[in-house]
Image (tube, rainbow, N blue to C red; front, side, top):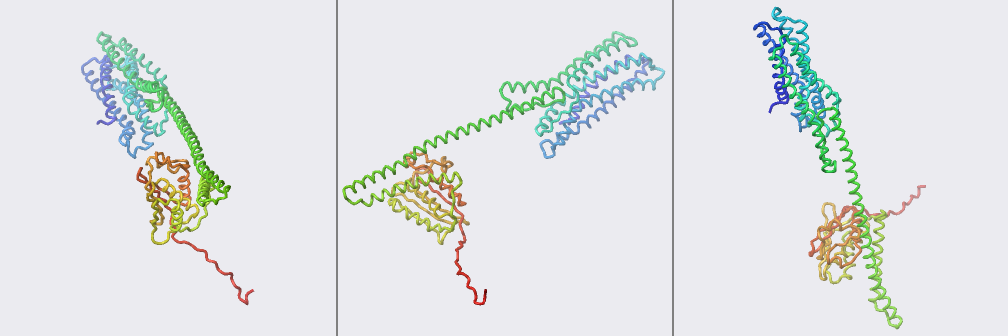
Length: 555
């Protein structure tokens, strides 16, 4: 693949060489070359001067495009720094202007020096009078105007892919600062003036020629006719690229009715059209930021609406479940008290089982109220713990013993490791944790099912697992399992009642002790809850020392 400066040099030579050959032929018609020797010298001098001019332009172009080629070589690597991008962009923007000025200046110098060199080499055959100087000035003015119209649009058009790409890269890095070179209106004014001046000077040269023959008129007319459509084509190409980019961006906005994902408009040149493109880019940025903010607000409002709807649903469900859970023991307690009252009125002794049933229902009511109070304390951050060393094995044994009379048809087993396992915590709250887990395990297990409690220690942690053979919990409900008022949504689970507060309180109590709680479950095969707490390796006992006795001689 040819380098960038090579491709642009070829563009320059393809346009410049035919144009300079035609200009040299036309200029030869204006000079009084009276002999073949003078014509031969003219061709040799013109060839040398124009070759030097083209070589100088190629070297200048190679130097001017070095920053752009460096950026292309390091693109996508760590060497693609902000300085490299900025230097390449500025150079790409300035090259059409620099090259146009250099091409016009070198051509004017070369064409003016051509006749001067001929006059010095062949003074007897080439004479320079006022007519020749006037014709030289006219043809220099015509060709310089022609090159001004051709050079700038040519390089703007041919460098457009590179400048567009550079502008997008620079904008992504917030490096795009547009240097105002020349306004679009002034550029069009210059182009229009040159378009009018060039053919006028050509035709003036044709009429002022020493011998204006039909061949001379045809040559000058042909040169003007070749140059005019070519310059119009290049000017159109230079302008249409930026206009088409703006039009496509506006069409995308109209088509999508939104500025999101429209993409930036590349800035081809820092002129009026470039300012317009960058202004549209800034407007799109502002509209996108506003749209994203509105979208975020809509998402937040939707989230708050869903959260409020869920809170209302939980409130209604909680009120329904709480009224049911409170009414059930109250109804049973009321019936028991009525039976006791009738027996008392009849003079008979109240059976012991009636008193035990009444006590159990009162205990159940107290537990429900305590759960509600604990939830309130957790929400307000007022739940206090009385930290002290706790023997975890003894605590679990007491919990198991308290449940055996309440569930004689379940097989409750406890596995303990060798040696005592100590943790630091609130004994009453830890008892509440394992009461909740064991109560759930018994509640959701079938009659005759096994409930296993196992205590292990591992790398400074004590782990208590409570396993049952109950209905199980679907895996998709695990994230909500420890939330307030949540109850497993299965046909069997919903038939057991409950406020859905036990696991919420349990998780908070475990986390307040510096531990964690995990769950494993399979629907229809049982559930295992595992509580992990930091193990207390050494327990410190308080030792009471007797008061110090003073020696007889001490005061």
